[in-house]
Image (tube, rainbow, N blue to C red):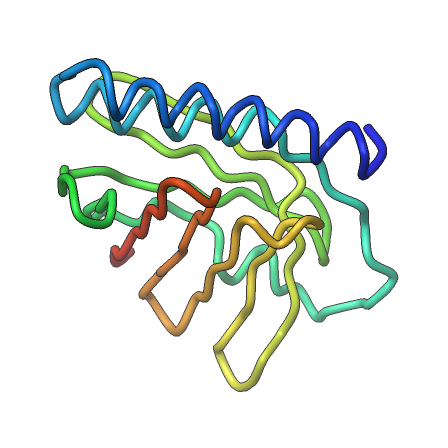
Amino acid sequence: MDSRDQLETMQILKSITSRILNNYKMKKGQFLFFVLAVFLIAFTSCKKDEILSDSGSKIEGTYNGTITVVGLATVPASTTLSKVSETIVNLIIVIGTDSIPLNGINLSRAGNNIYNLSDSYGFFVGKVEGNKLTWTLNAGVVTETFSGTK
């Protein structure tokens, strides 16, 4: 998917989400799941050449916490990180019984036991510090944040 296709996709997703926010009332968990699913479908990533010493293995695991749709709702959730390579991880976001995969997230070391996570388009950023994971998904209309510990 080239950047023009990505932009068009994000504009469509933004429009859909905006309509939902303006016209329908959904349960908080269903709304949160819908928003995450819609925006995560559009993500792809490219592998970086940077070699990290087993960073992916160091941050692998399940982090339990909460997801907040800024200004709307906070719900219990978990995020599982799994190593694909030294510079790529996959995420699985779980809200209730619903799972949302986010594959191909870039991984870079920021310091001693601190790692940065990002997608290739700048919609998703995260950080692992020790046993704490935080991330933000910003898609224009909606911003979602997660904070959890392993």
